[in-house]
Length: 200
Image (cartoon, rainbow, N blue to C red; front, top):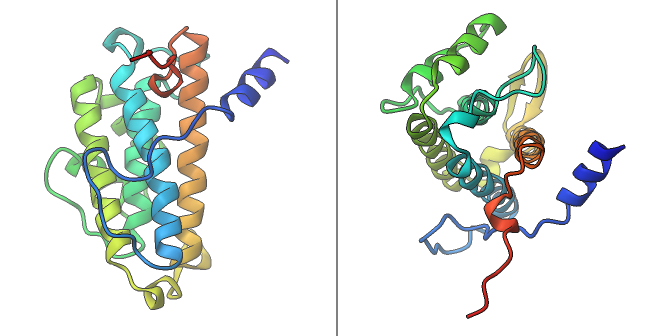
């Protein structure tokens, strides 16, 4: 009951700006902007929360058999790369390279996936991986055309349009953002966007 009330209260948290911090960009017309706005909102909050979690808390997990704090954030980055790979993204160089190598190949095994997530322990590295995955996803989505979004791909054995793929990706991102928020609240960590606003 307490968890249900907690999760209900979290849905009332105000959203961050849909634009990446420090940047203003011309709106992209059509459904791409709607996909990108939802992605930006959830990814901004995920990254902001990752930066707010103390290093010593990143190994915390509510029970055995589920992802730790740090592993949830790494999974957010890895799954973002996975979804984008179906739209043509190639394995990137840089901080996210090793994670992408596992997530973006077809036919990965879950034990390998979990081991790769668990290997990234430092908060600075987690943030770098997230920043790269998020930035590359924004660039990819922003560069697609409306016609591109209607193309169909085989996603884990079922046909889906790229539009549907990114909508599903945003749903997945929101699910794990909610998981990380619940972890934070249980550990008495207030998400930065829920902090009381200081009077000027």
